[in-house]
Image 1 (tube, rainbow, N blue to C red):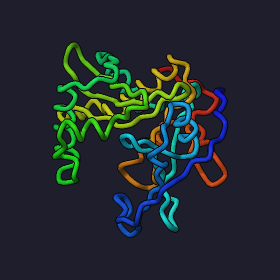
Image 2: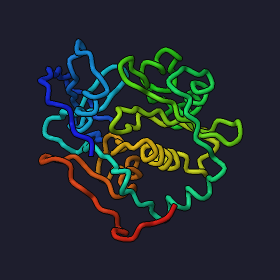
Image 3: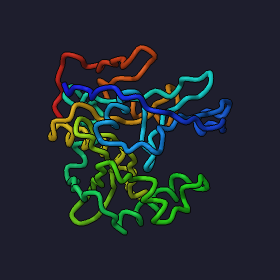
Length: 248
């Protein structure tokens, strides 16, 4: 297991209260790491372990008054056991290959992203992004971010934007061809990220925040075993198939 770097005192700045984008009856609030700090991948790894996430150049975590519904979720990739539907997704997409496009801007990625958010988030404020906003949203100058492509032949189906801290991978954002929903490309992207983390010898794949009972986040809890960050630390959630290793 990779050791955590030494603890560092970091100043946080809180935002004002805003409507929660997930739970309409509650306010939301965030703590941001001091933007004057020069982060490193090692520091970001330590912050991921404390429930922080990256949005563009900024590192934040939820700090909502009276609510702890958002919980960070991570997968111990060495122990992951795919469920039946995940194995089915894997087998039905054997024609898909993973291509690491590195951290460069690609107009084809932006075109796919634009089609995805227009179809999945119409009117949500994301469907009018321009290339500069897209790039600022997904990348940071201090963070090794890779655009992992899912392709069939030369056709681009999806892109899984992924941070690599050197100890873990963190799933930043995945977008895919809206016409290919039958392939379950979101699930496939996570399966491929798990395999990539194993190949690189990383310990974890971080999936961001999860809220129990929220339909659009249910898919995250379906990857087992996983861990959820609670008040006393990371709490393991075992696989229902514990003790029986499942082949992909």
